[in-house]
Length: 299
Image 1 (tube, rainbow, N blue to C red):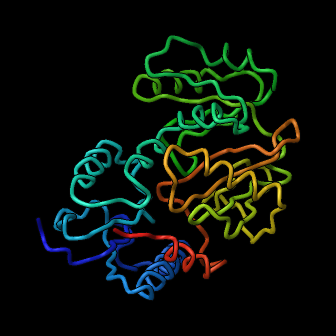
Image 2 (image 1 turned 90 degrees about the vertical axis):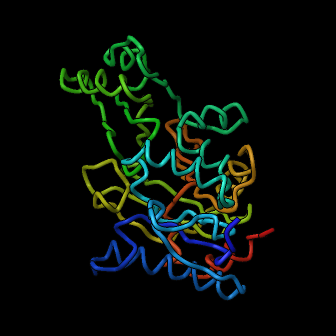
């Protein structure tokens, strides 16, 4: 076994190892990773920062790896899955390897539904399934639907369907389901008007929240697509719902981002639970990085 040179390696991807760009997006990444590193070092941990795909690094030389800005993993799926399996044999992962595997595939939402968590209706379309998108949309009570992959992030292959399914989108679905599972959900009409709330939970306890709203005429709340983000003061009910979502996970996560909305029935609902490499907006609440560091219990 290699000597443990590090307690924790903060994981990023190849694009963000060094700050060659000074745009707002890259600057936010380095600011937030820096806050996490400072909080960990203040606890006495020896901390480094590496790309998850660095071929020169010996992963057995660190006690833990902490997933932060590995934001290219869904574009390098096969390589990512191989790296996860290999690295899990050499070091421990935060969040745990079992939880990362579970959270990578949006079939996890079915597990949370079975635990009593309110999630908007989902129709999974499995690999190789012989089905027409137009038929599935026709079966839904809502006239507008959202189609997206089960393995994805940053709105990759996410489509809003209004009325008739175009021949182009039908063909796109048929191509996609030859290689990956998809999911279809009724469009939640409150999102363009009220937005989506991201609730950050560290060590099982809520720390802070942000409100994300899409730009006018869009439905995607990510700032990559022109959406806005601001600190948000959630209600007690929202906090309780987020913490209950986290408690429903198969193993306790060290950190989680719980994305919630008011659904078409006026109820709190879970849209996503991000446990792998969520943006956690430490730049808007720097002390939350200290809560994360405090919540770590290293063997």
